[in-house]
Length: 311
Image (cartoon, rainbow, N blue to C red; front, top):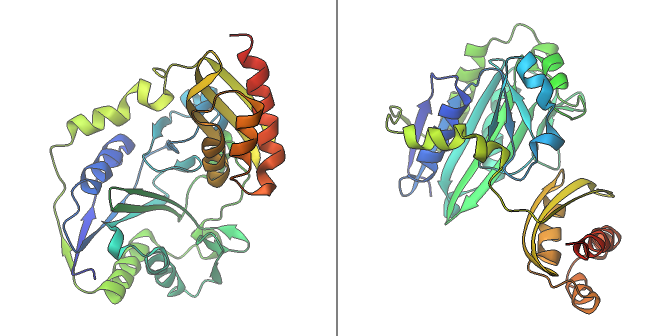
């Protein structure tokens, strides 16, 4: 049971600072407690930790738009942030982690404005068949993070120029332009109190410079220091995929996989990581995954097999 609820509101709109802040508190969650964080980022693209910037983002346009690229700790697709986006995070231990309860804090807050909202099967809040939220998740050493972007009044045109995704989000202000940012925050905090009880405010941790440097680091954002023997790209039934392989002769030592589908990414890793390129061994691995992935996995395997003979 969650006994204490701590609220942290960041007044800093630097995305590197805010990623470092989340990182710090993720690693310092008090026992039997939840930390709830609210913040905004200025003009930035936040890349999922399993995503290639060149696949997800229009890199050449970033400078023209005076936007920055930041890699977050959670998996998933790239999202665009500006001060028209309200970001939130739930940080707590696994025994208290409940995605449905957590997203309902945001959902019930928005329902107070009489918007025709619904929750889809991915636990995203939707309006007029478009998403109002994008949520991402991380679990590590019994610590859990659910973080989301709530589209209040973001610049959708700039978003479309910067990230390679369909225009499938909607701003709250498109449905009701009289919903103000301050009202939105107030409703969310009231909903949080209704669900969990009394909220204690905490001050921002000051000593996060080292963590901030990690998120600001070019090598971390673009992952330039990883040793890759070969790189393959395929269009599969579950979306486009890029696979960066570190190999020794015909042995796959390590894979970095960039895909639009998190489950497909996990299936590829399960089937191919540490695999010796051998048809019998591959078929044995293949038999351990769901049949709907067979054709795509065979296609990827054959490409790696063909390329590895050139090494």
